[in-house]
Length: 279
Image 1 (cartoon, one colour):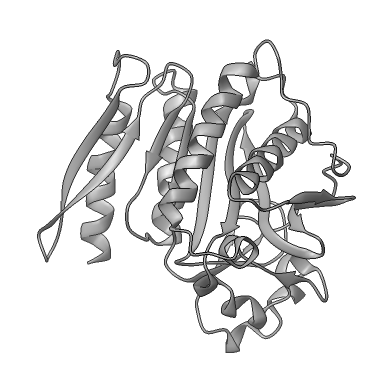
Image 2: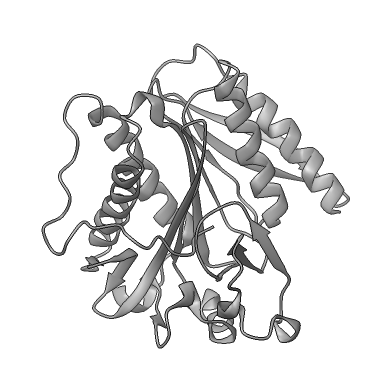
């Protein structure tokens, strides 16, 4: 079944990258069949002259998400692709950067889900249903080659998205991510290849994604409490509702970044040292 899902995503990606010349703001619906059930799934691709947003409607493996990113990066490097934001949920998985210190996984032989070592910075985190993962594939050559600004922009978008749901999220001095008081809502970490950014953020939306965090030391931060948007907002929030808000904010930032960059929220410092576990 995973092979069929990978083939579906291959087809989807080729169609997505081939959407050239569509008018700004046009919303295209792409259709593919999910075998063996042969049920029809729909993926919304919001096409913009600034940023393309790809929303994958069902959880995918971490490997499939990584492959989607890599193909977008390759397309940009070859001059055939554009900046994109991939929004999805993953099948349950723990991830960690390529580090000698893997203590944040604790005893990885006892973890309830597989561990994937990936090419991003940071310690261990968890991904699974109920968590929105975003992969901004952006050409930083056109954005000042400033990795710290890229991290701050992601934080700013997530803070503004939380505000849309009535949640007062903030930064914390010296810690990359998004917080409500001392409770962590989102993890952020990126990788760069020839100044093409990949990886991105993981924003906890529903309570379903929280229990696996108890099996690890999230981001290597002892005593950290993980929270989610629906707990902080006091109401149920569908993952795709949050995805729509974040997609809109990313497009808004993309339009502004060339001439009038956003100023970070004044609630706390915009320092982005110690990038910790994201996708």
